[in-house]
Image (cartoon, rainbow, N blue to C red; front, side, top):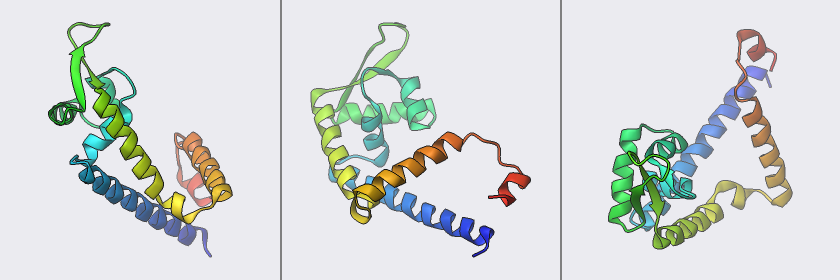
Length: 150
């Protein structure tokens, strides 16, 4: 197989896995009456977080986090409270119910992810190693010369 073809097939397979993960995440969130963004926010909140920090963790605009925070509050999963570091800003904090729902969603998502069903334990360890290796190299600048040498 030609390197270009192999790289294309890897990209196609990765896109399919990511699409599956997104669809699964949306479906599991919906089972709990949440959007995928709400479920992602629950996963990212591990203590009091400023709205700005949450937007960075979610990779979205800070204004969108306001919509997510409103939804989480409406569902009784989180509350806003004044920041102890900067009284001008608000932190979002999970309620006890929010933490319990987060844990339930995490258990559901984890159990239903493709690697849990398609890979045995040693394959998952290898897969994790490959993911970490790619993450570490992810910031490297790809040039035409390095792309063709892959």
